[in-house]
Length: 189
Image 1: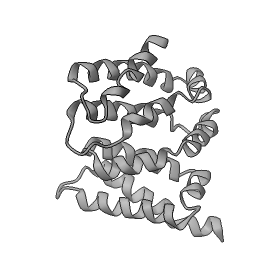
Image 2: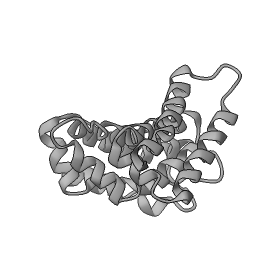
Image 3: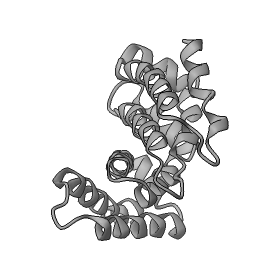
Image 4: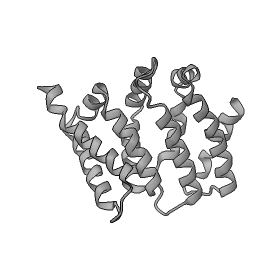
């Protein structure tokens, strides 16, 4: 597993500005795919979370100013790995939620929702939605007016960017986020 980890972290230095070739992006995506297999398995998911391995993938979530196809492929794969860790109803799910809240994955996902390509926006919205469906996640996201309004403003911009024929699944994720946010008064009251 250390080879895959090195493959992933070796791409860091090619990010700002992006100098990642499609071949290098493919190698990183293949290594991330192995971590995704681990994230999908309940027995290995625990080790990934306990070692905080997902935090090493966060640099791939930073949006770039111009469309960079190799980086976008890496970002989509990274969001897939993180999405597979949002199975909060499994025995180690509360630890995954704690890691995501502690490591501030929500602001990174909000940036993806705001500035990345459609597939990244959809996957990032799914992650935020899954966090918001958890009482602890919702409480975290609404702990300050700034956090709450940042999420609402990004969701508004996501809706504005939806094409005339939007992906219905993405629209469902956005609506679910709004529904979760509307419940905050029940938790605070």
